[in-house]
Amino acid sequence: MPKAPKNNVLEELRKDKGNKVKVAITDIDGVLRGKYLHKDKFFGAADSGFGFCNVIFGWDSADVCYDNTKFTGWHTGYPDALARIDLNSFRRVPWDSNVPFFLADFDDGKGAPLNLCPRSLLKGVLAKMSAAGFEAKTGMEFEWFNFSETPQTWKDKHFTNPQPITPGMFGYSVLRTSRNLPFFNALMDEMQAFGIPIEGLHTETGPGVLEAAILYSDALESADRAALFKTGAKEIAARFGIMPTFMAKWNSKLPGSSGHLHQSLWSGGKNAFYDAHAEHTMSATYRSYLAGILHCLPEILPMFAPTINSYKRLVDGYWAPTRVSWGIDNRTVACRVIAGSPKSTRLELRVPGADVNPYLSIAAALAAGLYGVQNKMKLTLPAVTGSAYLVQNAERLPRTLQEATARMKESKVAREIFPAGFVDHYVATREWEWRQAQEAVTSWELERYFEIV
Image (tube, rainbow, N blue to C red; front, side, top):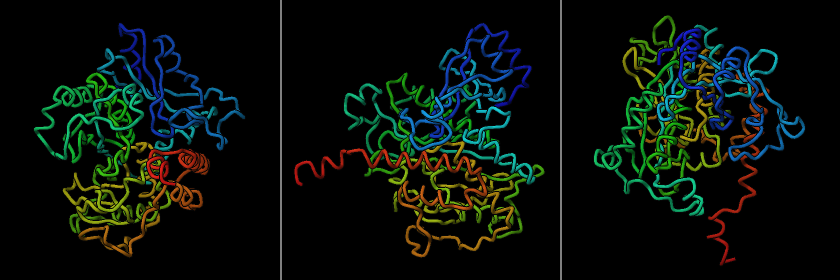
């Protein structure tokens, strides 16, 4: 959406009849954390920032505090960090009486961005991109399942057997969308009013599953749209008695939910990925960018697959990639090259699931691609034709969060493309996540062992 100048935004809010403003920050898991501010408090915060407890980078998605991170914890007393409101992120929430809404970033207290903040991390990558003479355009697609549940009914059912809003496997179904028209139309219309234009919305293969393609934009705006889409979809759905899930894989017998990332580099107003005279119209810049992503992908996989559940999606034969691979318009590979017009030529990274933190996913892809461009990497890996699942000599992506995190922890390239402090903190949070899973007794274990052993 067009951005109003800073002074115009503040002037508009001064004339606003309402007395509150909503502000939010995205945590390390991509969960939106926020609060309402009185309008008078907001104007002071817009000028000098405001205090926001730094625990949001010191706990997991269930609000359980980490015991293995240095940034914050019981040893620091969980003080406030300085949050800086980004006036360029101004929106109004159409399903919340058009309350003004802003995103904020954390400051390190010394005037510099806090690199543990996902949005600030992405800004840092974009600054490097700009210094190299490029701008990045990105767009995300999400698949997600929808159920006739509420948080309370889901809890009362002991988190089992959710009821999908529609039955059966019916991708691209006009019939199925007609069963939930008010919800479907609210998503299209209210997201547009919220500054999140949806290019396409349709059913996917699976009971109650939808896919939305969010209109591309510059990378920061694109990440904002993606992060806000996930929360917005849940808030809109609640009005209709619907509970969405953006888990990567909620059912082992059904396809997973993707968070595909489309991307391209631009320079001088032209698509730097496009060369009309090159094979597949892939420019030298495009080929080096792709080589960088393929090189870095196994080293930074937790930024694309951040949860225990992410790796249940990355299995053969379920529309998700499992190997370091690329191909021309091939939906079995990790990197799908879309060789189109000078405007539409782009790369689709198919590794991320719907559970991804959009800021980290976009930052990781752009940083890896830029690494390839700046090092003039050669695209030596051959394109896959046919099924990438059958390419035996292609490197297999790590199969678990533990394996992927261990690889990132030891990775030299991860520390070349990201601040070491971010890498250490993020790795610790993923190690924590794995530990929580290892200590849990699951329904699978109860079913398998309760009677028999």
